[in-house]
Image 1 (cartoon, helix red, strand yellow):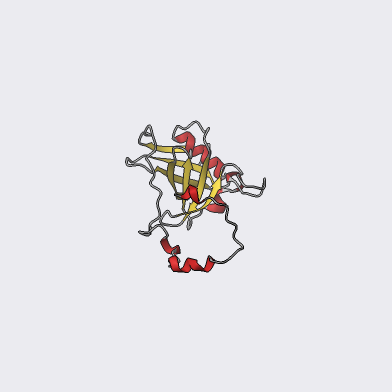
Image 2: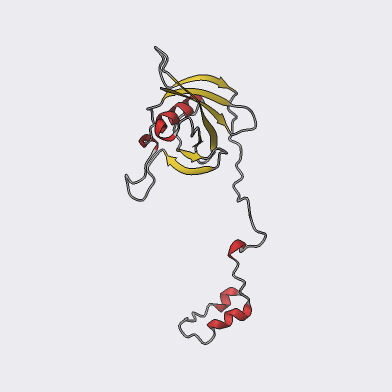
Length: 180
């Protein structure tokens, strides 16, 4: 079977590519198809991220094993497309170049029979020109608290610190002059 994806650049302008690729190809094959169809040279690091139906980012699937124990982390090459995406799970996020943070919303649009004589992967349709620079991302939590302690405020005051007076287990290093 052939998976047909719409790959949309997260930008103000409508910029997308429609890509056809075999369901048994890997996420690394899709990565190659995406960077080629958008005109990147492929020299930058990239990752896919699983997500829910509303594009909330979940688990990372990197291009390279970046774990502490070699071979422990699964990479793009370890995932056939059909193991991650199907008619119920149609969305995945792709980030290319972690300096520029080119971010793409990748959605499975159709699953069809292979066309006789077709070569996959294939860019089926291209719309829009790539901007010179990626849009700047604003990474911040949704529910920031007004104070510096957030939800971890422990309600201690100066009187509570009296519990340390007379405790000789703490050594005084004489650094008071550095705190003024």
